[in-house]
Image (cartoon, rainbow, N blue to C red; front, side, top):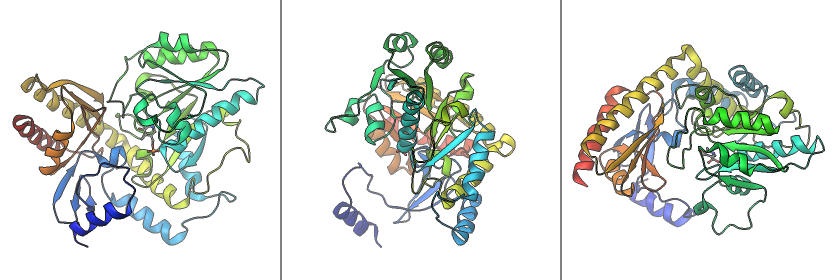
Length: 397
Ligand SMILES: *Cc1c(COP(=O)(O)O)cnc(C)c1O
């Protein structure tokens, strides 16, 4: 169908929940995507940190094709081969002992909240309150939204789920003050993604870990955006020398397919028993086969993680050059690995739009932070091209 007609139908038939660009994307390969009218784009957004291996990675495509021919769905009343394989892979490469699968980041967060509450209720303790950070993002379902520390997402949906307290990010004392006898957990993103790519001080998370241990409360890390190699380690917590009790994953996990996971240590995970939590589609054979393929590629020889570290450093260096060139426009470059933000003195929208017109996909968050989340396979040449386009755009606007 012609692009103009598609855009017209999109407006007619879809709920208006996104500020979409007037582009229909039809095909992708590696770092590139093509629109229905044949224009080529370099994808520095990567489906918002989902396309960790780029578009249509051959190993993911083959895994999906094979699994689709074999078995697409059965219920969790049966054991599922690719689900077992994926759980084993994640457990063997993380702090965790057990995995639970669902279909999105928000659902993984919901599962984490329920597990933390259940863990204490099983011990006869009335601890249910979770401390989260201001400026955080944990998803759009009601409890995940209630956990989120940004009013703009919550207004109009009250009453929210009770039991969440929000404190300043990167401030251990603020957490200390918020702990009560009802606190069951602290939940944080290791690096705040939607909140504007905010990296905490190197000793923040270890301080929070120690605080949680002192008070006997759980540490939940929401690695939906930071996990699966995004920061240059398989999980971001490895960058900070700590381990959580519970971790949520989604975005990059399925290599493009929709999957979420909640991982935990045995002593916490044992609070979930048959009937306590479930998901009809969770851990479905098809998405798990894709996730196994994606995870295996990322962990192979550490090549992708190395590439992510090197290209992340290169991208930040190129953006720092631009900062020197445009000091009145660019406030700061932040990030780790290939989760990178550029804070501007102005609204990010016109710059994102101008990049789109020049064949580059990026987005902005927190109003004025340009965000770069390219596939972990991005090359120097592509980063150079991005930097050239940004230079021209900053010159013009
Ligand atoms: C994107 C995101 C979520 C929500 O994931 P969905 O799959 O959109 O539900 C939750 N937490 C963090 C940190 C995220 O970045």
